[in-house]
Amino acid sequence: MNSKKHSGDGVKIIAANRKAHHDYFIIEKLETGIALVGSELRPCREGKVNLKDSYVEEVDGQFWLHDVHIGSNPFSNRLDHEPERKRRLLAHKKEIIKWGYKVRTSGMTIVPLSIYFKSGKVKVEIALVKGKAKYDKRDTIAKNDARRDMERELGGRY
Image (cartoon, rainbow, N blue to C red; front, side, top):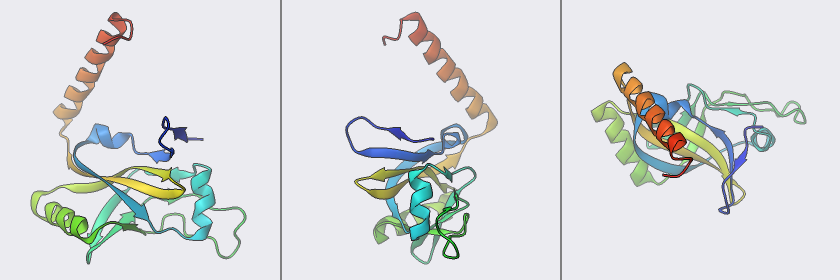
């Protein structure tokens, strides 16, 4: 199970897009709700969610989440959901319009960083991102390696 629990704030991670930090510069983050159908809740609780290659699109003043795979529910028969259907994200109209404008004008993209439970509701953390070039990725890896080596030398204290 991919679920991890943050300390003390009632947040349970369902799935995280760890590759996003490697592939993109994160400009801005936003917490949104998500419109799910009933049969999607159980796979979320079981951690059967995959964010790989997913993205968010702004259409007519609404955010739509594409290519997120939420596994099927073995207990729902003909009412089962489509695993990779597009899902509506719930955010303030002002934020949606602002982010949509930035995507259209400055070549940025919106990607989901994580899906988690917060106070019993499923939330999606999305980010406004700009793609990294290959040399930027190498630079990030080198910085992380140097930081890890320094922490190892200091015995975990920094």
